[in-house]
Every structure is written in structure tokens, then in C-alpha cells.
Image (cartoon, rainbow, N blue to C red):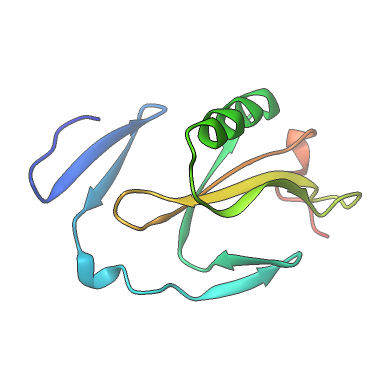
Length: 111
């Protein structure tokens, strides 16, 4: 956590600034879109991790009792876009996705 007030907070995300403002009226139920059988929140922030960091985070969040929107798993198995993914909400209700690729060159591969 960086600078903050009662209504906003800055987070250091790998030397990038993510700013979260308190806006309860913006936290209504978000629409979802089906992606490989999962109801992915349309409005979300995604971060790509190395596979080892992804597994470490999945283990840490699971051990902490995190309520996942989408449980940690691998989607698009056997396809060019195969990826490990998980989704959960931050304290303000924003959907966060963390994903990893065995082959990072496949990040933007077409299915």
C-alpha cells in the first residue's frame, strides 16, 4: 500500500500504481461472459504471473480461505491459449484475475 485517504488507496503493483477509489454505487452485480465454461466477470483487472508465482498465490489464497469467483484451475486445456487462472474480489468488490502460462509466448495466441 502506498498513499491513501479514507476514500482511496494507491497500491504498488510491480512498480506500477493501481488506484482504488471507494465508490459503492459502482459495485453493483457485474455482468459475466462465458469463457471455457466459467462465468468471467466482464469488468476485471488481470495480472500475468509466472507459473510458480501463480501456484504460490493460489496456495496462499486457498489457505487464507479466500472466496473465489472462479477457483484456481487450468482452462483451454490442450489449446494454444491454455492458462492457469483464478478470480476473486478485492475488498471494494472489484474482480481480480491472476493467470499464468506454461509457455509465456502463448499469452496472446489465437485459439
